[in-house]
Length: 152
Image 1: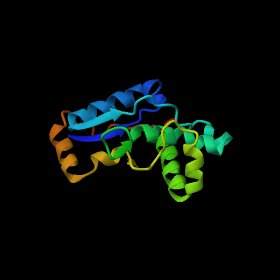
Image 2: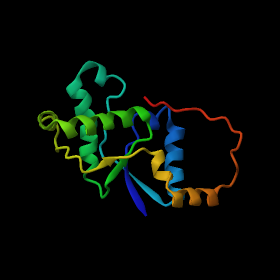
Image 3: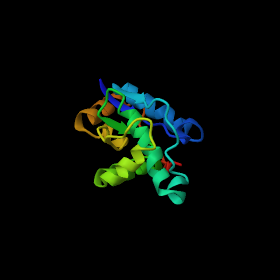
Image 4: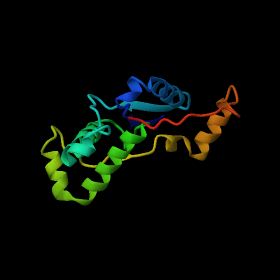
């Protein structure tokens, strides 16, 4: 069974609860285990990046550091805004050791970068999984109008 760290974010347990429920149901049906990051916090997507640059990195870096305690190599976050905050941490702290040390000084456990970010939908896009999805379809959704979920 493939395992990923899973960050639900603030809205997947409130306004986007259906998205969170379907995320888990689809993964389970395909033999993918989503391990929720323990003791997670808000990633700061709503406002932190607009008010304090260091805070905007420390909040998601804490989550990524907690994900590093799980038996996984990758993390997924269905919320596009949360994903963007994690990507900012990977990019900025991966290129600036001094900034990484500054952020880590604020955290109870250091962020190392060993757990990599992956797009949530990307975990379903390999040929084997696509074939499995096709086999498990119970009702065609052809013609169904879809709505985007932009996240926080």
